[in-house]
Length: 213
Image (cartoon, rainbow, N blue to C red; front, side, top):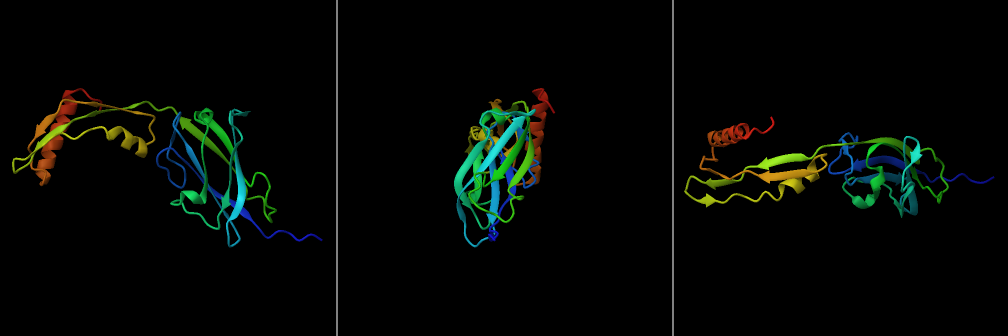
């Protein structure tokens, strides 16, 4: 009688991210935006198991999508994984054809059946992904020329960092930044009153410019 294998590979969790994400994958996904899938797996031995593939199949309204199935590998299934370690997960960029509307995704660990396992039921996971159409985020920056309490003048800072930083942090499709004419401020920003005065000025400018609330 053949002995049953004691090895077990397990597909534990996935992460679908475009900027930031949480373990429950509740941060909304934006249509058309570059999307990375991370697939977290482990095995029950005391060493990584190499040369393993993962497949990802996707469909929309029952029709297979271009690029499906997507194959990741060969790579190692670790003994344990960490979200902080990019090398402890199977990673891939989802094809552009997948990044709209609602799609159904089936993920299979050891898709080429390289390992005989005692339990195959924990090798697959099915998820539904919703990609939302989101308008461009329009921002008007107010450059501030600041004169501090000692009389030193600080020129207005560049606003070039705003769009790329926001794209890294929020589920948005794109950012458009325009600059308003600069203002000069001499409020004492070492005090709460000084900050309040500056913020009140900015609020008044926003209303005067007819910006949306």
